[in-house]
Length: 263
Length: 299
Image (tube, rainbow over all chains, first blue to last red; front, side, top):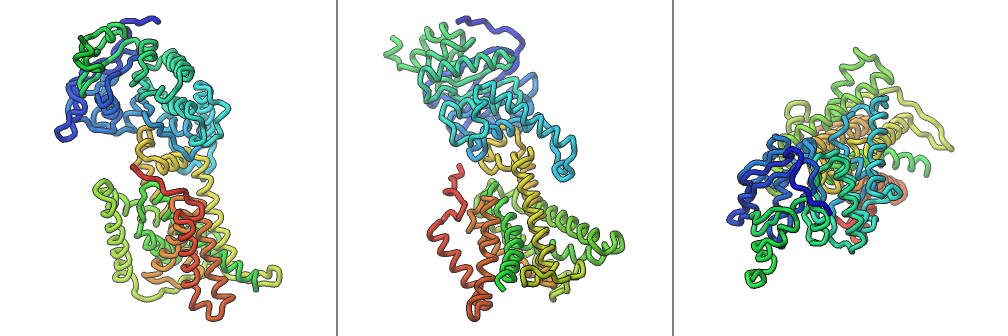
């Protein structure tokens, strides 16, 4: 697979970002930038601070220090829903769909920030209200079809097979029309066929002009899909580069295998 | 006789259901019991009383005046509920689970005493909104008042159903009810949806207050307590947090009460005891309520 050097303009720039919990430096001194159109992976041992990093990016945690510049705009300190409106959407390591809603409704909720609110519209049954509801449904169906779940739209999210739930999370995130899509272990618990399927989907997402940042544990997937890789250990970014460069990096091998493994 | 009793039961049940919806909507999103809800329904009835004196000059008597009074009282009760949330619950939301509960009890006492001190300590006559007639149905006579109450309640439930199932904001409400943090991460402003939920719950409570006043013909500062407690129980019976459950629980409670007072000797005195005994039995068998799922752990 081709691994291109960073191209395009900078979409996300993280400067000296830290998230401390008391004395624990879950994320510390992280500097990195992501360019438009890239697929970038974050790897690292368990507890390296990868998910915490994603949580700071999406406003779950406030961050202790540093800047998150997205399109030149500071995201740190913004509420999660405003970050979505700014163009960052995400999925979760442990699937967090709206279990009691149908697959289609989940995606429709994802469109929330991209549509107008009509409080009295339903009562007045205004044409604008009806057109808007119709447009939400049409767009949601397109996103379901994009991830290959067109036939399952009326199923409750909790009743979908596991792999479909992962894809539904992606469809729901895409429905907000993000510029940056953040995927937290999208292939967790998948067999190799399902993983390949998901890799293909992530490429399709990039073809739509969406930049992708993902946490991934399956090294085969990382090597296959990533333009660049960031390596975290103990909350700090210890390496970055093209996949082949990173796996040859002594510090990375040390982080995964310990000092003796590295020698 | 049976038909007459059934209509009485449905009328009472419809009022309980409307109140129960207010408890269940709020619980569904915040996992919190809004103990001030019974006062919101009382205030709805008092606003209707005030409007009944004012509105005929504007809208005239008859249906337009009645509908105007109804809608304005609902809106007023909704706004009060939103203010209660904004100033008494929201600042405490992240402090502890118990703090908003205590705050709710405090608000309840303040509102009740406010009406007691500033408006009236006595029962006030609630005006007949329209001339009440009797309609014969299968040998029973049913008052047009009961038909009006039942119709108004069913229309409101229908509107709520449409809103929750079919509109964008209704879906956002359900999403928040499923998982409020994830809803925020999908672009929904949780504070806005919480305020909207309090508005809708309060408006339904206000409507129930007006219907309650119409049904009994008089209102008092403490009128909210008993129907509030019963409707809360109805919401738990149906499965708190579940909208259909609140409606079902309200009607079951209404039917139990009316049947108990109609068919058991001295039943009128015993009806609350009988109704609540049945509730306890149901909860022993199904702790999560009739339509409730296992109560989800909120993380």
